[in-house]
Image (cartoon, rainbow over all chains, first blue to last red; front, top):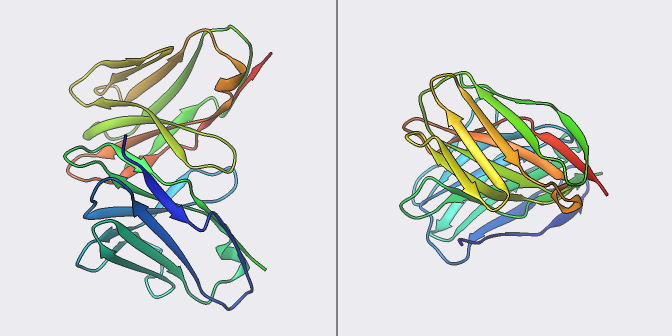
Length: 115
Length: 112
């Protein structure tokens, strides 16, 4: 099956710094990728849709200047949390649809802790 | 706005028991429905995908059904095992979109 990787798996950063998270589709190309955030005991909430070659589409309430998304190639999307604060601490997961299907394949997630 | 609800929020059963997890959604205009498994601190593993035109899908001890008109899906797990312990998430693809809307999940514990 299709494999999606994320890097890093865990990151701890100080308040005010920026953190970049990578999402890669390993054996397929993805013109679209999705970024989700999951708080403890909560469901996954879609943050934004990453589009290769164009601007990302953000969900209502998500600050596009704080969560920068770059879909640099057909296999890589990055999410940069700028000027991170403790309330940004969460589990960030990306996904990509399989080619020709709507089945979503998810990365293993990145645990961000802002101190 | 599509809303997905999963009941129960948590379930604890003895090993070997058959069980049913429930998922309901408010807007029946969906493209498909997907069931996932999430282990603590991990990403999601896709279990079953049901297209809107289908009634059910089976994989091993898992069977998922879909009643689109009533906005319901169930995940049936036969002969549960301790290794089945995880959180099970239901998600629907909104019609005309690749977006997934998730429920909050059912945390399943299978006791040896």
